Image (cartoon, rainbow, N blue to C red; front, side, top):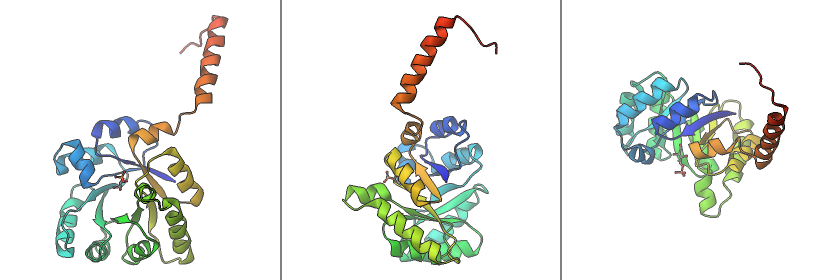
Length: 219
Ligand code: E4P
């Protein structure tokens, strides 16, 4: 399963890239606003740090506008993926951009039929938002299971399931159990994945015992 990081914070991206765990980045207009930076500048910086796919969202609401914006954004770097919303205009734009070889991540997906449409429109990624579904008392992971089943029913559907709106380490584990292709994870949740109280406790005990030996490993 690929790990994308869900942020436009370049310092977080630089730091987490050193782990070797980062396969890509997703941004959205809210994350760009949170960064307080210019859209093009921040995306150029991210693409300079990360070789994998970097999603940049268009903001036009009509298909023609999305196609124009998508082409502009795609010129920023070879690894840019144009992000478009799951509306009929977004699907039209997805079809047009995909047929020109531009990768598209269709975002704001909340149903299996929406995911089916995105795949038929040639999306490289579909982004179902599990956390926002959980927020309204609908099981987000059930949607991931449904999409996995549907996509696996048809060899022609090559769209990757990119689980978005991740809120906890359990979301990551559940997405992996279902066989999602990608998870996009907020930096704080990604850091939590390595944490376990028994790891901390065990390491503290090992270090205390090692100190008693008075030995050092030369480095
Ligand atoms: C990523 O592509 C999405 O925009 C993001 O995961 C949404 O997350 P949120 O629901 O926590 O805002």
